[in-house]
Image 1 (cartoon, helix red, strand yellow):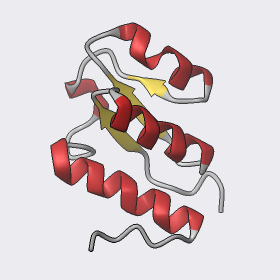
Image 2 (tube, rainbow, N blue to C red; image 1 turned 135 degrees about the vertical axis):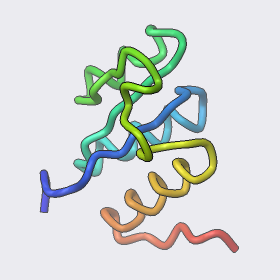
Image 3 (cartoon, rainbow, N blue to C red; image 1 turned 60 degrees about the vertical axis):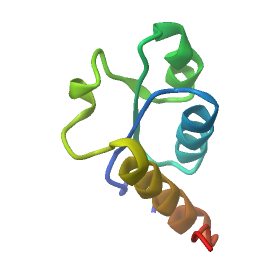
Image 4 (cartoon, helix red, strand yellow; image 1 turned 90 degrees about the horizontal axis):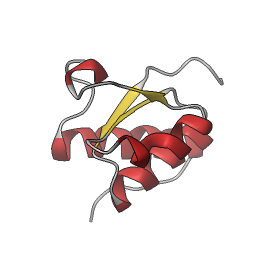
Length: 87
């Protein structure tokens, strides 16, 4: 159901982070984004992303390097009904 997902955070909005955050937002998953460069988060904010002022403001335990990336990928896959499991 839309609106019933726990938020995810994506820290570092490079090519991979941007794609994961945009996919999460399109899937209706509340998404918190942060990057050292504010301009990197602008289009994600227009898509409905919440921009954190600092990495710490994104929330403890919501995202951290590989574990955070896997969490986001798993939630997007579950929402979209796809299997994104690593080989």
